[in-house]
Amino acid sequence: EFATIITHIIVLILGFLFGIFSIRQPFQRKTHSDHEDVALFVGDNRCCPICFDRNKSIAFQCGHTFCSQCSDQLTDCPNCRVKVTQRLRLFS
Image (cartoon, rainbow, N blue to C red; front, side):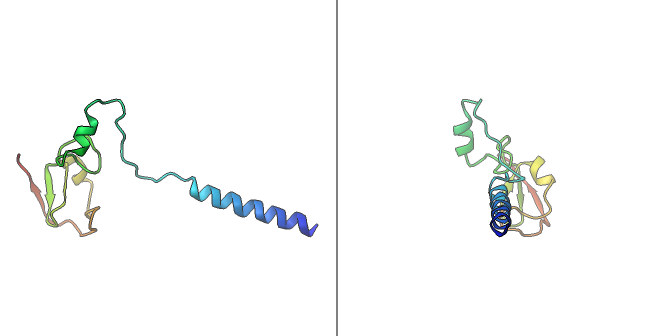
């Protein structure tokens, strides 16, 4: 009886641990395996580091840059965690 209880506890612990390690991150970057030119675009410094879909067009006061769609959704810089107080439009 004691061995059965210990076995159940071990199974519960292992299930819990494997459940934690298999959880996917809530925010994952998009992959673009269906685009031929993605490797060039992602390697390009103009690519938004959040969505990988658009060029950077907004700079925060901390100097980090993102596309306008992603930057509109941010209140803190995802790179340095500074509260966003200024958004500067970038022109290329």
